[in-house]
Image (cartoon, rainbow, N blue to C red; front, side):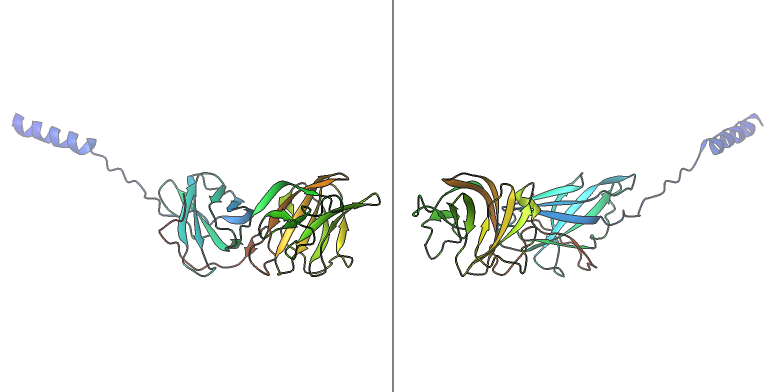
Length: 267
């Protein structure tokens, strides 16, 4: 009798002490990132976007493709709202997409922004002599990043100070335009399609940026830093793709259907 009662007490105690804990599994991915834009550099593209607001956000993954509707391959991961694609080839247009990742491992869809960029070479602090003083070294060729004679067939621009006025000159098969004051070389993102100087020259103003359409249908930009009677110091960027007016890219809106791939170009 006592044994039977003891067993009932033990069973009751065991039954009362067992509790089932149900843990919900998070399967909801974050929203796709938005507001993506790029800054063009020399073998470099800088990406930024609007931060996601999910409280369990873990970071972002960046993908790339050689076509808007192509296969997007994994490029790298970041915990911030920016990514630097070092080693992006100059003169090659690259398409980008970004996903958001939460702490449960859920990944969003690819971002819906159409984002592409074409890195291009650039240079800083180039000194160009006044062609009236140094005709053999006052011309600049963007395609070779070198100075040479101002009247060489490959010269794109040359510098002149004459009659108290400072000029940046091009030849008759080349165009140039003053696009105004800029804080840096990077502010001018797109070469204009018209409005070129009819006299094939522009008056130099420190801090102004000038866009050049070369004789072989390439686009470049020049930012005047300082100049004197004897020389001009400038920064430049040059688009390697013929006919491509993009000197710094911007995002556009549109649907993106391609899914992410699995391999990366760089870390």
